[in-house]
Length: 244
Image 1 (cartoon, one colour):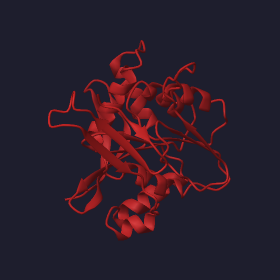
Image 2 (image 1 turned 90 degrees about the vertical axis):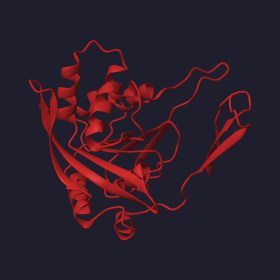
Image 3 (image 1 turned 60 degrees about the horizontal axis):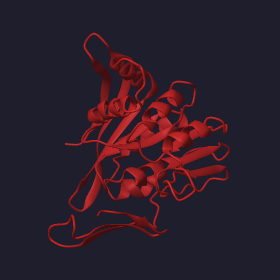
Image 4 (image 1 turned 45 degrees about the horizontal axis):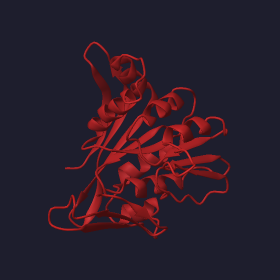
């Protein structure tokens, strides 16, 4: 059966022959030791200069940023690079399913979800987000939005917790907004879909999309979110960058 185990340097996912038709396989994802800063991402072609300037301004003005892309597209690397711009005197709460985000700041609380273990209950991302709101965060960094925890993050975004950075899997920047809404609905909340989308339109400021292309990872699109148009059922967005 498929499983997973992790160390400080890698995540290993084996699939045994009972489910893997060609025989037992193992996928190893090595965690990055090197942490790129924004200037280095500019140098290697991940970020164009115009996007770097906009994102730096967004961090300074405490905008809420969602970073989207496929597996291995550079979402976490970009989040870490952006987090380096956060002022030193701010209190950061980092929430992850698997510890990858390393932020060199003096006031950082790092929380990691835990699977259920013998005699120990599971601690979910939702549990950690709820606890975070009682820890006086200046900013919340959420490793990945992929399920019901999106509802708790959305509540934080709309109750004064600005400057949040988070990531999600999506094929485009606009698709990331739809996926966020779908994840919120996974929480089983008694809210109409258009209300959820309206809250996302109010809570998010920028969506950055990355792709992994041969030999490099690149920002392909940046959307500024202006709100949600309920009669037309669409997000009001402005494309501020698109890579040809």
